[in-house]
Image (tube, rainbow over the protein chains, first blue to last red):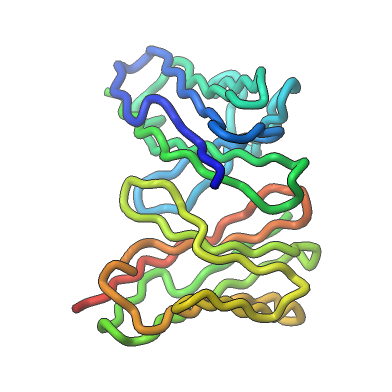
Length: 117
Length: 111
């Protein structure tokens, strides 16, 4: 099956610093990647959708200047949390799809736990 | 946009019992309904999915039913085992649109 990896799996940073999270599709090309945020005991909330080579589409209420998304290739997307604050602490999960494969086939990465001190 | 509601939020059953989780969706254009199992601190894992042209699908102890008219779909787990304990999420998607998740059900299977 399709494999999506994320790096790092966890990160602790100081308030005010920036953190970059990488999402890679290992054995398929992802035309579309999704970034989710999940707070404890809550559902996955979509933050943004990115298509390879174009700007990401952010969900309402998500600050595009704070959560920078880059999807420069068909196998890599990055999420940079800029000037992180304790309220940004969460579990960030990426998901990838190859729309050329049809409607199904959305595969999730293992997630990155971000803790901002 | 699509809105997915999920019930119950928690479900406790004895090992061997059946468990049923129900979801409703709002967008009649939704045509793909996956179910995910998520263990603590891990990624959601697809356990079963159903398309709108099918009313029921079964895979061993897991089944999903879909009522397009009522915009309901349900997950049925039979002969539950302790390892079925996890959080289960339903989701709905219309074509190439985004996947919208339900609020999750925490299933606890007691030995």
